[in-house]
Image (cartoon, rainbow, N blue to C red; front, top):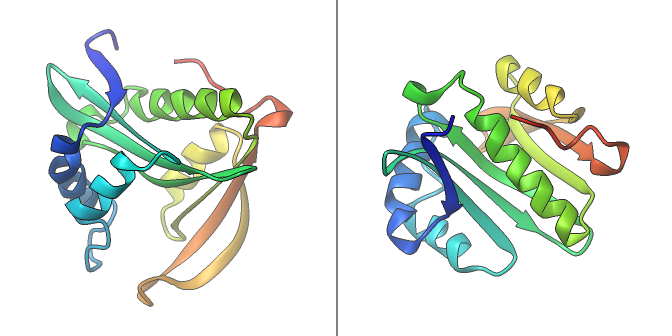
Length: 159
């Protein structure tokens, strides 16, 4: 894991992040995270766009938006060649620590209701399933809403 560098995204990263999102998150759906939207989040002061790089190449990323008392994970993806190495867990740990520093303890996200592997991953980080949102993904697919309360001490993880 020492070969990975975690750093905030730069504007030049927007196209690569959008491409990884299309391949891994938005597969089978019309893209809703083009480079321009990613770039907006890179520039926003209420968002964190975190990248994980392996020898300079994008291996994964996460986008979290912070509100007054809650944060929302918009996207998280790890390239297939880098999966099953704890990289997603490290990205989430970094975001959880950022939320704690910001005084934000309630986190939320949505994922495809059929993605049981992702649901297990988030549950292992302390997220709990909430309701199903019919047609959330452009009327094509349902979403499962999940939440995590960092007050309970299960939201932070080690690599």
